[in-house]
Image: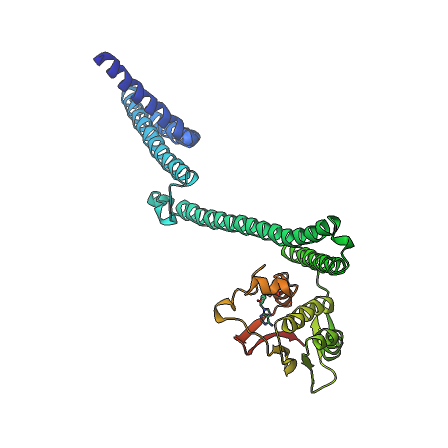
Length: 354
Ligand code: ADP
């Protein structure tokens, strides 16, 4: 047993020596060159062959130790680096400061720490993306299911006999049609948001007259506002004000904001104001509607976020309008702002370059 243990220890020592020598083998050429130079010098300088032989043996022993020592250091350094990499791979480290190498490897230590920090933030980002993707998918399925089930319900009831009931057949068909329109609006919004978020939205910037542009949008919205007895006020000081932007995308912004103001206003008015601010033009859309609670103000631009889900659906909302608006305004290097007071009204504003 003792002999086996001794043999095992010896094998370990031999193994270590071999590993160390292997580790220093990268310096083999350099060490051998220096060794040979020393040997040749000794041989030439020393006239006494016995003394030369003695010095050469001494140099050989010294170089063997040097060889072993260099190998040992190198092996330790590599082992430490390997263990740091294994710790990173097995998620055993929490902060970059836990990565510690020897002083002479401080440059490498910094590189590994930077790589670790980048990897951590990339992983966090990917996890967040995955969460957002799952949430989005769940929301989309839910949003699609609601109108589809409702349409299905009306059609089934009609097929089960209601089609012959003069009192309900037309109104059921009208309701099914209303939900089909909502479904198509939702699909269009979904296509828009996915194009925007996948970076496929192409903007085409041009100068155009914002006053004339808004007048046109207002004219188109008047019939919708009239139905709810809401007045749209737009009294610009000038007839012409050129801004730089994508007309089509900005039309989408105005339609969304004006439609929202009409949707969420019971009585009163909706006012559009244009302020010339030198290099910029400020656009304000203000209503006297139901307002938005303070705690919801910074969430209304999130996809599918609604202050009141039932109400939003009842008025044909998809919950995507403001998310699309925000993306388009940001693509114009601007920011959409909102101020609101519950039961008093809401004001959306943004700037465009002139
Ligand atoms: P929706 O399709 O539901 O209207 P949006 O993204 O356009 O979705 O708006 C998000 C939510 O913000 C709405 O559900 C509504 O609660 C609120 N909101 C938007 N505009 C107004 C407004 N002018 N007045 C009151 N609430 C508003």
